[in-house]
Image 1 (cartoon, one colour):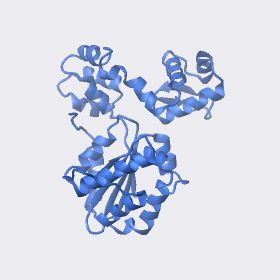
Image 2 (cartoon, helix red, strand yellow):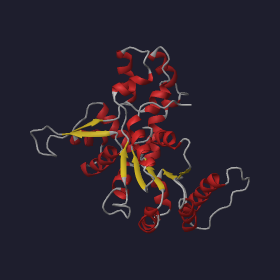
Image 3 (tube, one colour):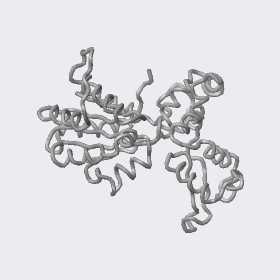
Length: 309
């Protein structure tokens, strides 16, 4: 089981809001593996919680999963779990449960639910406006799709715009925070771990450094049977429809092609195509772009890898 480190400030703020006993609608987002769910689980420990992790499947299957989450809270010992006939019925049950008590309702991987049930944001907006805002519900919407969370949840065109009471963008850890995982190691070794993992807690844990970093790398990263060996490819497959072109772009940048024209030449694609893919990689936090302070945006721009791992 992975240990929980850092994020004390985020945890303090989440708990302070919980103690207020007022309605909350908090948006928690950040790239995959950065520790969002671990933070939420730590916060929810010992609190009345309905935790629903949305699935990348149909609306019907997600309704089943939501029904199971609600019933697991109401009837934890039940052998047979009844299913709600509609999302309206399921959400109405949430409303009833929060009339007299403080309850945390988490929807993890919210973009999956919104894809499966496009009307869900409007449904939540209606409930917030007419019922939930007067109660004690503590709603958390969490997602790994950065562009979706920023545009379709926090953006002005979203039905949920203006309904949130706060938002937390969870970033990778810095060097000082990364070093907390291995206080017994030297500064140099912790700097190396930070350089390898980019401060992503999941990768720090899975690297499994005991005493020797080289041994950990050979066992857990470079060995074909190691968890981290397939992680970059699996992550891209989860997020992207055409990982081959993205892989080619990442490879080109890694080999030193920092300008758009050079990247186009390496991957043999048009500038329009490459710029579209670069935009997506930047939204995922894998690539970043930099422009000299003395130049206008767009001129002399270079592209660099933002994700060390």
